Length: 314
Ligand code: AKB
Image (tube, rainbow, N blue to C red; front, side):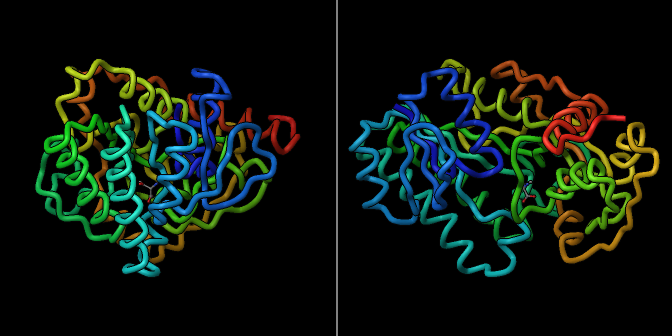
């Protein structure tokens, strides 16, 4: 039985569906702090900082695999640093402890490009540079990666992790991240609205289409144990682009689409992150390969969101 924590978030809502298809609806338990009355399947409301509540669910459903996706992301994390640290770390430590005591077979923990800071090379950032993040979210992910590695080494837990770039999909909305602009922009373009961008036009960041991110997660979790040589978190890459390049890609469908740049505090976060990532370790160890580039992603985003908003594509 699989438990997903943060099942109604940007990644969680898509991954939950995929896991239901892969394993069957009755083998997946969705949990989230929020309630979603439209959700079809096993569901438990859960605040993952509450150890007893988490333990009860694990025992009730005889959970054997956990995907811990709940976290306060980079931009939101800066609004209340101590609370964000507490939520991100307490929920992870609860997952690790319940996994140890209830003998969970496999755990997935998402990390992020936010673990990197100005002391890492920003182009083709390697797997193991000096990690000095400048956000609470990044700090919590570096600490989280080390805790995950510790539980693997000390207790033999099979915990696997990916450093996701910004994820872009049509199925769900992100919340509180620095890469969120790259999802919001498509919604504005399709609604023929003007887009106010909180990053400047030349801010290059690593990004990935949702389908690639989901496939990477499933491939990592399916990989034979002996292939997993990184027990902190794997660098994972697909494409890198700037807001200006993204606009160009969208203007192939919406030539009149307009953007204004008005950088805010999220610009400083983006400036401290890599421009591109070296994911050769993931490629070598478990055969990672991304399928989608910027224009392929734009085509699908526009088709799917046009259906969603019921507006014919140009
Ligand atoms: C964020 O922008 O905070 C996230 C991330 C890159 O982890 N999307």
